Length: 580
Ligand code: GAP
Image 1 (tube, protein in one colour):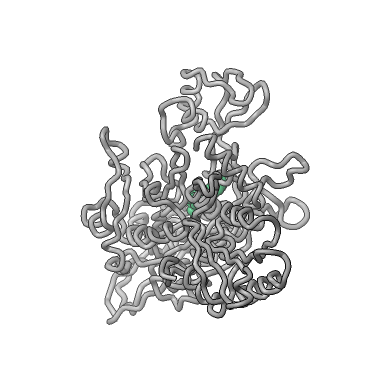
Image 2 (image 1 turned 120 degrees about the vertical axis):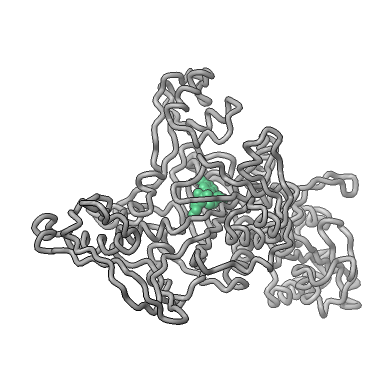
């Protein structure tokens, strides 16, 4: 983002209480921000809008899991081993830098994250890249992997390590067996969660864009990949701005504007479920204040994919010339459920009943515990369970002399003759299916930031420059400001009464009687309040007030009696201001 745009929003955000660096009295701490009163309201409104679509309207479940989880969860999910960024420490001033960002900032290379550390180190040397903090040359300095999870201890002592969750998703995956029961084991179903996630980012930057504690709104859509299809017709005509991996690799590749239906038919988006969620989400972004001329869906290139993803499209917004990822739409397959099944030895599948019973060949095992027990001790039963799972999923693995299974991250090799492996012909009434997952994962802070940047406007009113935030009325922190023209003659009591009545309808209202009326309008314009109501001497006579629209500054005189209904209709888009 351009310095000017970032600085302007940071200044406005701090001055008017949207967000500011936490613990400023102690010099602040990198990557932690406090949402002030306006920011907290804006964030709440965005989350409510997300919940309205992804939970209420789509009919999904919502949960609220802890933010600290035991080590086993992240050993299984792969975060312990692979949730790393590349770090380079300056030998002179000791500042830590994200090595891939140093490369991106100083060369033409994009997505340096997908390069191995050795290549990053070579590129830094070849381009004579210097420390951005002190200017010392960084050639020859080691580039290392740094795990982004915050580690802690659960309870006193160190016996039970835990981690602050780096994504809310694992709270859903790890309790899938329970959640599946609440869904009556009927696929497809979705589970949503809004909450905090933590990443010990090497170099937090750009305001709310890269921080160490942030809010995510995630939906895990579970489905049977063989039989379940999304309701694609609902979004088939939605036009998507797509920047596919193929277009990114092509010399003259650019954005393609395709409907969801076209994108699926042409194979630009391979998964129908991903396509469905890209289509479903598009209008939502506009409704929370994203400028859709500064928005695109970009597919990950192969080297860029997370350890769990088979395909991923990011929703990106443009801020000061940079594209910022605000949502990841990932096809996670059965990766997470398989991993938790392997590590826990529990079932993470759903039993699906057939319409008619069918006769099938079923691989079974009957491990010889008199051999496994003495050889593997306490872990023998887990090995037997793992053999059963392996036989179900991958019977060909039993074709050789030995078969290998994984238990809690360790691999065990067992002679096939000790597994009692056999293929039986049985009549089955249904089958166990491990669902696949498509996950829309929204970063709330980045969306708050985008909404502020995209809403920021300057114009001239009464010969003066005015700054205002053209936020959609439905997400603006305050919906209506109420002012008495003068703080006397009963105008103040009348205006207080109006404010109280508006609050009683559930509207977010601010009352301001300080200073000239023009100044009061400017204060509300700057925090994005879409409507202001002024009580004047005519109000006392005729029970009418003036209502002013933020963006046009137009004013109308309306009866005070149905003011609440009028403002609600304006906020919810049921009525336009020029129709008053
Ligand atoms: N469960 C999938 C997941 O966490 P991700 O792409 O790593 O995927 C999802 O994160 C979203 O969370 C991103 O699109 C972004 O909006 C937000 N996010 C990730 N890291 C962030 C950070 N350090 N600061 C602010 N937001 C972040």
